[in-house]
Image (tube, rainbow, N blue to C red):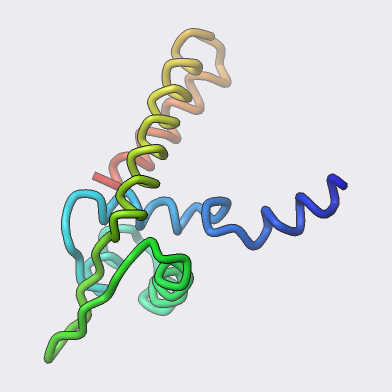
Length: 118
């Protein structure tokens, strides 16, 4: 049973960090693929692959312009982004409450992620 859950989770877009980063970036505004690549620090090709997965899942939509492709969240994607933000707040509160070294290391990692996202 646990093995089946692992197989499903392995292919789930929400387990992939880059998908989460893109969803959070797109929560604020529309982005071009190039700008998403620069802002996230991920390669253009990787971003394109993640966008295809997100689009297939119904979380983003793309608009093809003359020179670039704009990516935006769908209503479903917006709801998911809000849930991710809520979970981030809960996780942050949990780490801050522990006051442990692990919590401080996690805070530092979270700040780095937030700088990429914001």
